[in-house]
Length: 180
Image 1 (cartoon, rainbow, N blue to C red):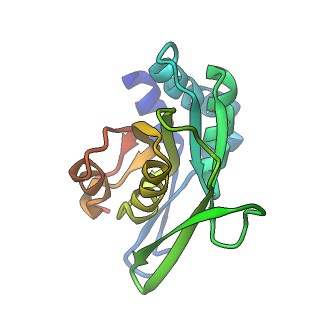
Image 2 (image 1 turned 90 degrees about the vertical axis):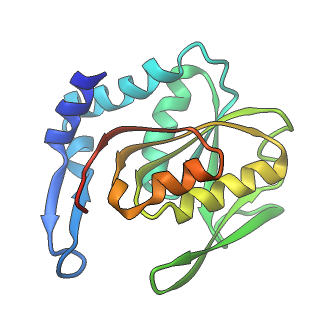
């Protein structure tokens, strides 16, 4: 998998000082538009979860949908969307979480999982961990088991992956960028 990680990491575009000075934004669109890099990315996840009897991929709004849908298809699992508040049309559970300058919310249909379902939680990037922690809380409230929280990129200096581990979650990322 190191080959996948190195290759994918080289394809990610870094945009300095966006959205504000001092921030290095990790732009995944360059991975998505490169057919070889995108295939390697999905293959990295497929190889990790193939044969693990995963019932569903819980994909976080919105870039997690891209990875999650391809992964769910490849490992023959269901796809569940964890959406921003107000985007799901049926009975939902809502979880609020802290942002740098305020709060946000994610929601999940109440019937998205059955108790005991084996779920992989997927997003594009782990920064401070707030969105994934909120999504994990929703999944656990329904009674499903989170096999792992997974993302393309980890920004470990922002502490999110450690916060996930501190909450008892296994974490997998394809690559990481230190110092951001």
